[in-house]
Length: 193
Image (cartoon, rainbow, N blue to C red; front, side):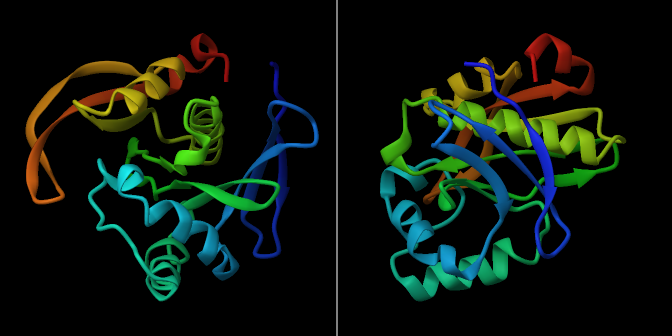
């Protein structure tokens, strides 16, 4: 289904993007985290299946979710929440921005797996980053070699698998192999963003 992106500013002057998916009454929104997201965030970051491939520990209490939002999300302007009807369902971690390149990542509430939402959320995020940071020519993403779902999301959105990074990162007590993916600013037209 075609989707349209509109730019708006929230009360803090930060940009937000909105896209309609599935039907016009069910909109996907990219916005900064709010403390009121704690219950929604807790639902997905307390799920061991959601955090299985993440470098963070599973969060188990509302206080931990509030601390995560306060200390990890809110201080970083590009650590965004993807929402359906203003309910947080996807965490798009901060883009680690280094000159001409940035790293992008995400995690999605399990209830929404297999519905194309992560693909749409990543597409929105890529479009926003490349528009707001014109100096970025390369986005990088990493996917655990066992995380087939994340690999599919990246490939659907036009990311190219460049290779495997052996013993690249520490996740849940183990050092794991990861695939590295890239998306170049020149890939935008090919990916139909």
